[in-house]
Image (tube, rainbow, N blue to C red; front, top):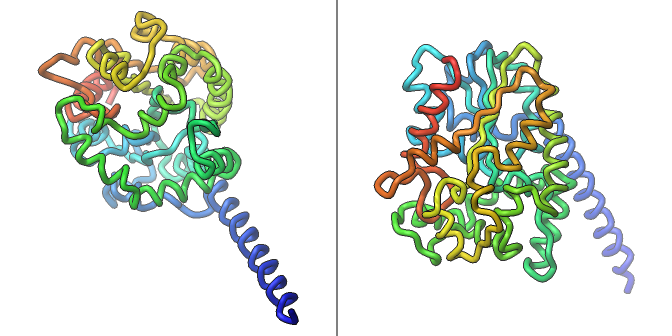
Length: 332
């Protein structure tokens, strides 16, 4: 029994060290004291790009903008516009909350003449306020998602851990399969639909509880835009969810269990999520909203699909169409 006080003291001291270390890590991440995404940025840019202190375009986004080189629409824009300079600081799996931790530093470093911010309507609203359900998800996942809504550094640790995830490693097979298959389809999409069969319907139409999430997202987006000097043009590029493009993708989602109350509204150009944001952000006169949905709908055919069959990301064709759309909307 004489060892009990020592054991107790050891665990108390260990707990204190862990808490202090985590709080310090959170502060370092939240205020971007160091460049936590240096490796991701280096992968998407050359050393010459990153050394540029007066870049034409600074790009923020998630996995749609941080996909493999040559496939990426930003790299296709580089090829099309060799005289224009780009720095792509997009990171897979992040949202506007994480972008706000490093946006100011990147803008200061690269002094962009214009900014591209890529939005993905399929999951940006849950990036700012994660899902929660004791019935649908494990205790560990619920606790992690709740904690990550308060501690941003947890999302970074999860991002780094995904390289070891079997789900992520299996996506190579998922994306390489040209025929739709329930078995091969993206697990994250299945998780969303397990939470709520109307997940995408309610997100795109801003039905509760996603209207409340939209209000949170809007606050973070306004914070992002407020960090940008008013003389710098900002292009918000809205990546549609595949179900909005045509019935091929929507029917595939139905087979996965998704339900859509109003297909017409989901697939219309001015769908509620986009329309509301356009209205709420109109005070930012340097912001241009770019919605490629109509272009995607016109170009996606049976013989020329723009999205992967079993993943909601755009494929090489989709990146080409997105590049060509941006080419007509932005002066390069």
